[in-house]
Amino acid sequence: MTWEIGVQKNFFIDWLPVQAGQLEFNADKRIFTPRNIPRGVNIVMEKPKMSRLWMQADQPWEELCIGGYLTAIYEGGKYRLWYESYDLSAYGIRLGDWTAKLCYAESEDGTDWVKPQLGIVTYKGSKANNIVYDASVAGVYAYHGGTVFRDPSCSSDEQYKLIYTGNVPGEFNFMIRGATSPDGFHWRPLEQTLIEDYLSDSQATCYYDTGLKCYVAYFRLWDLTPWGGWGRRVITRAATPDFRRWPRPETVLALDGPHDHPSHDLYTNAHVKHAEDVHLMFPAQYSREKDTVAVHLAVSRDGIRWHYFGEEPIVAPADDSGQVYAGCGLVPLGENGIGLPYVVYPGTHNYLYPGPNPHAGEYHWAIWERDRLVAVEAPGLGEFSLQPLIHRQNRLVLNLRTGQAGEVRIQLSDEAGKAIQGYSFEDCDPLVGDHPEVAVTWRGNPDLSPTAGKPVVVDFCVRAARIYTFRTETQ
Image (cartoon, rainbow, N blue to C red; front, side, top):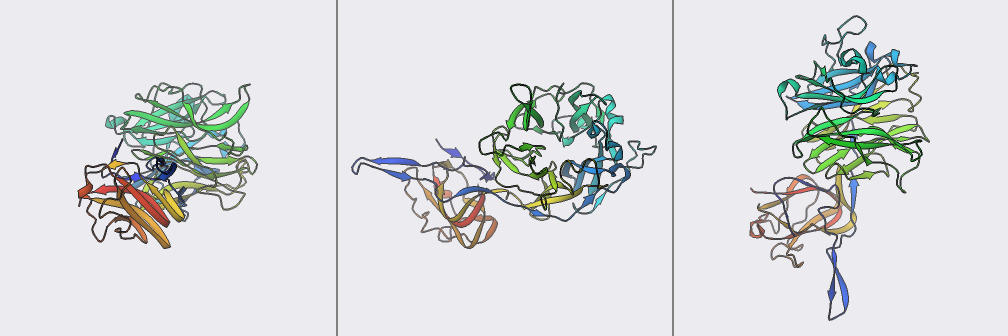
């Protein structure tokens, strides 16, 4: 079986593109010979750079804090941000989370932000604020933990959608609710509840999947023990072709394995569909022993089966007394960057409430070079081969970075493992340095056309380097 690739980028987020290798029996020598066995390589995550502070709580309706549940969208040459705020009325009351207000801000460059006076929601007798949704708009069901997304499948009067956890004030009666808007400012709550009797008391995320032709959402859930006790918080998923009717979500990520710490939970999920077969999560992992929260990374090909990088966080608090949460949305920043919004709080999780630090919460960007979140890495000398593939272009293009003493060489082989003439490791010009896009050449020639339309195996010989993506192109 062969794999046909095109001009789209292929990401090394897991071992799917890489051959596991095989053992071939030599009948004359009566021994097994390994072929295409990966050696000296790992899948690793890339740590981001952290931006300076670009927004903080500074309004009366933000007096307690600005929340970790935020959505960033870049559209029409503008950065748009929906975020939660809490005033001091949330302090010290039962179910204070459901006093949340959904606010709006915007920026031309992602650094300098404006909180416009929109004149939509009344706060303490005045509409001179940037609040777009709260319990006064949601009605009897209140509001908490929402995500805004743009829906490409519907009419313009409902092109912005909001999914959140609702609750009847003063009661433990939780549910998933929704709202629609033509512009992201003026919202209409849906009459019907999306999911009854469901507590997702952190940010629920949602998007419309054009490939699946359905809405997909991720939630948080308390996983109960078989005897009815409280277990650990997990991340769940549900999908539906009708935004107004949802099935019960099912668990897709939990920290309950033998290699997971027994005091760790998952809070927010911060799901992003980065490419057609690349799903990312930036879950907030809560440590009960330290009462701190850090952001980790999880990757998936289909949004259902996840690989979790649990060894170390991708964004961590500055010390053992803080907490960070990732928001929803990877947006372009600068010429070749992508940014994930996150919030920093000064105290540990339970120390923030009650709030000794008024106007808590600071927003920053975690910034990566585009498409460089996960890579195949050879810290020393490594080798691996891609699954047999067919291409129809004339150049092979890689996204890679090597160390000072590192290099990458590529060989094209037939399915029997024999190097194709003119495309051997010895013919390959070594790739050295930092290259977001670089064409492989063999003795100065990048032309792949003699191998187009035929099954080939791409072999990698790597030293002190990371490879992020590969693709073919015609030029």
